[in-house]
Image 1 (cartoon, rainbow, N blue to C red):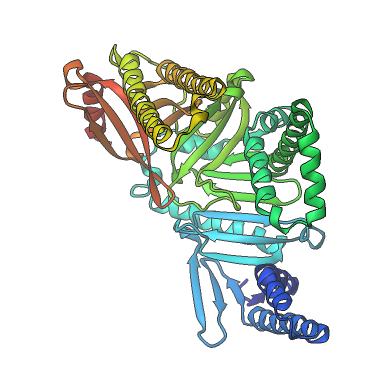
Image 2: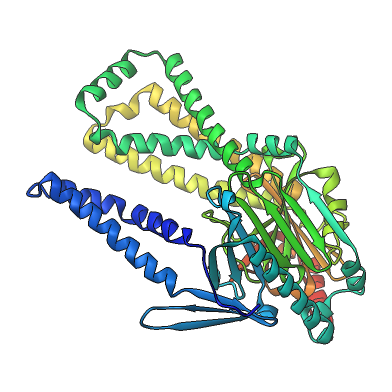
Length: 506
């Protein structure tokens, strides 16, 4: 088991392609701008770059070796400055197995090892066999099980309820339904962002297009009716939505979550298969989220804040998705089976707000909006008088401005009403439930008392003091940073109860 091994030779080709992708555009621009070079010289430059890159990756592959025994993984790398990385199995927090489509025919995978949570894995083993990864996973689980049994009194597992032993003996499994995944992808609003990016890309590359082509396109747009332009915009939106649907389905296809004792195993992916193993003791909080559109279909997404986590793939998500999509009527029971050390049957209580919360929030928001609108009107009036901007005196322009302001007011009113309806705070034993609504997305947080890092309160003198209320912020750990969960206009008595609850012996 302690024999030194190298990564599969296909790693040389993969690294070469990555290097070419990174330097492709700079090399192309350099070759194009160097008019003094002949075609043959430009070709030789390209070939020389590929040859040197191949030699570099070959030497790098040769000097990168790894081995593992019963207690740790050791990685050796470096040509001049040789380094050794020792990773004890007991310290490994997350093992992520990634199998892109080009590695699947060879039965090879990339293994990412995370022990801390500094935003990137501590080590990456590329293109190693599935058999080797399985042995590493089994040895890691064996060593962590032994460590838990020997040091349970001072381990993180010791802080969990007495159901720990039962959790170790039972397992739970969740598998996504394709129908729910399809609706989940269809209700994603990311298509609007992609459509906007497509329009922005067109405006950026407009100068690079041939003049003849630009003339044809401009004439077509000028001669087209608003109906035709609307159809074209709708077609672009449909294409963007299909792209988003494919990305989501490709990401969460055949999503399976299995709990075996204190170990969670997440498998997903269509073209690129991913498998992640993590310990439940790392979970700091559970968040159940619903966008406004998905509330109509009664769908929820469950994510977890982890004590040490890397961003998934290339997305800006620091949270780990526990359940991508599940029906509302099934989520509580399923989550209780998957995470028995949490309590999800906490009733929603909306009587913690002060009575004037809705009025105070609307007055604050519309006060700011009114100040902004008055400032803009004054500036436009002054500019119109000095520079003779007669366009501001046209009825169509004024009507457009009025409609935009009314639409913004209605949007703010709708969001505030949803916030007032959804915001809730409740305590049950050692669990805190916070429910908020921000940007038309309802989020329900379930946090254990010993996972709360801190609590902040603030009150505006003269606005909340007289009504015996305050704003409250709960601080929890999120990866290697912190997340702030804010609730507003809460009764002072409720805030004091939560303070007392936090100070109770854990």
